[in-house]
Amino acid sequence: MEKCPLCNNSAYYEKLNGKDTYKIECMQCGDFYITYQGILYLENNKEIKNDKYKISSYTRECKVLNKKPPFLISGDKEIFDENFYYVGIDLILKEKFPNNVLDILDRTLINLSKLSKKPGQWIEFNDETYFVLAYSENADIFKYILDSLYKKNYMEVSNLTKISVYGEFYTHARLTPEGWNRVYELEKNINKDSKKVFVAMSFAKEMDEVWERGFKEAIKELGFEPVRVDEIEHNEKICDVIIAQIKKSKFLVADFTGNRGGVYYEAGFAKGLGIPVIFTCKEGEEEYLHFDTRQYNHIIWKDIDDLKKQLKDRIEATII
Ligand SMILES: [Zn+2]
Image 1 (cartoon, rainbow, N blue to C red):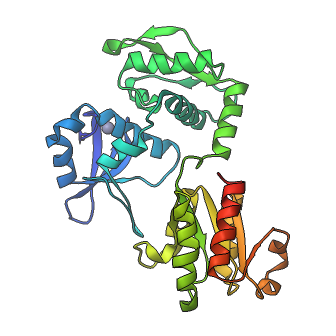
Image 2 (cartoon, rainbow, N blue to C red):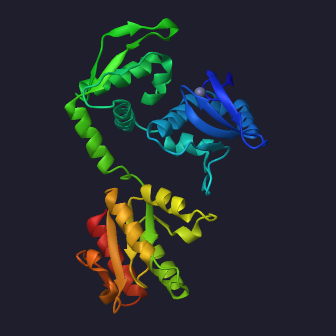
Image 3 (cartoon, rainbow, N blue to C red):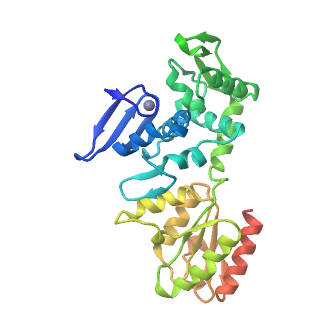
């Protein structure tokens, strides 16, 4: 047992393949990967010192939401490869940690809902490692967040109890039916603030210009970030990359020109998650569409300019 570089509690370190990379398992922070250099970055960067609980909240949230343990790196980059999800410590502080109170309340409610095996069950807070589930630095903030959820009628809380040096906090809480309903509403729109738009399409050479001047430009001009999987760094396990990207997208554009099987798969996956899908197809190729998807209102485009215009109109009408 050694000390966790995020919260200083005792944690398990597992050294990976003799390299100076560790998998750390911590009661408070959940599981994450980090290199020795990453640990030094955390230790030596004074600005991060008081914000470590924010990184701890993020890594714990990943665990509670059953996400892949993040690989913490210095800087503000985010990189996917077939083995790891690398995320910059500065990026976590800038973008991953909730930046306003309402967001903190919503995300705390989601975290706590994951700890309830069924509605009605009390969640027991028996030590201070629970604070980070409410994005809180200490017992006072934790209590404030739970009080706010109680006042919004999203949670019931137990009587206050004093625990060791950490002050007073609630030992038990549970979601009310309104709380469960709020979680349902939030999860339906889980990517509502995302800027990513996944484009599922053929990678045939003749589609390169359609991508560059059509899809990419239309999406960018509306302030979104187009993602096409062959532009992301990856090796062989392309499916994991695709799934991870679709899960984070605000919506997906599926172009059936060339009738590529993967596009049906990707569109279906997004629909299953409740992520909106815009269907497109080049004029003359719509007769090849599979009958399962013909029911959807496809944008039938004549040329690149036509595609760009129609796609922008559709996004403005149905997404923004
Ligand atoms: Zn920790």
